[in-house]
Amino acid sequence: MTFSILMYDRETGSFAAAAATGSLCVGGWVLRGDIESGLVASQGTAPSTFWRDDVLRRMYSGDRAEAAVAQVTDADPGRGHRQLLALDRCGDTGGFTGMQSVNYAGHMTDRDLAIAGNMLAGPQVLMAMHEAAEGEYATLSDRMLAVLDAAATVGGDARGLQSAALLVLSPERPPLDLRIDYSDDPLPALRTLCLRAHRSPYYDWLTEVPVLKDRYRAVLPDAS
Image 1 (cartoon, rainbow, N blue to C red):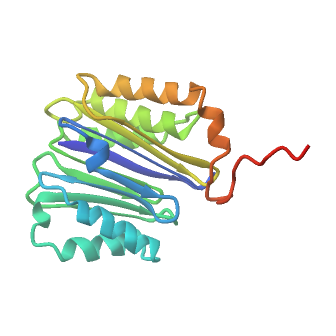
Image 2 (image 1 turned 120 degrees about the vertical axis):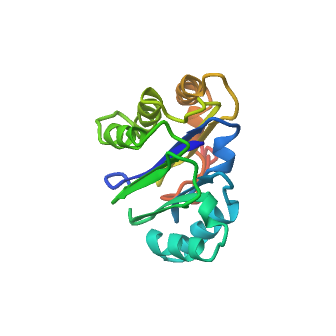
């Protein structure tokens, strides 16, 4: 049904996530993040928004990703139908794929990187995503878009795609949270939306709103 990636850029302290699916509204269902907690992707045949939010809260409180995933999934008797990825603020990762997930389903976790998918064309989708994530790119947004493209190229979601989402969290910038909730071709649409967001006349305004490194940033009145 869905493939997703979570990534931490140790050099900049930024987080990035992306997901795509053969149904509607993948951004609203799957991805959540907080610059002070990390990232979560909750998906599957019966995805739990409680998993997503509970893991974020645990990581904010200091739990490492693997421990947070284990605590949340072990307590749920319906876990066989669900899938979960987590990446904490230290770059540690955790993942879970339920035994009743629709094949092909699986996940891969490394330091600073977590990938998962279900109802995929095959294991080659996860491998292609991992390989693409290790390439050289100008921005984290470019990296995430390339990962989604790589997954789609080798089969992606076995049903095709209808929605896609991108989330980038930086200590020096406001969140970039872009979603294509329904499209016959959501990946090019997401790329176009990303380009327009960066070229928008409102883009300079983003230098005035609060960020992690300056929680009280604002436009100061002219003292003259």
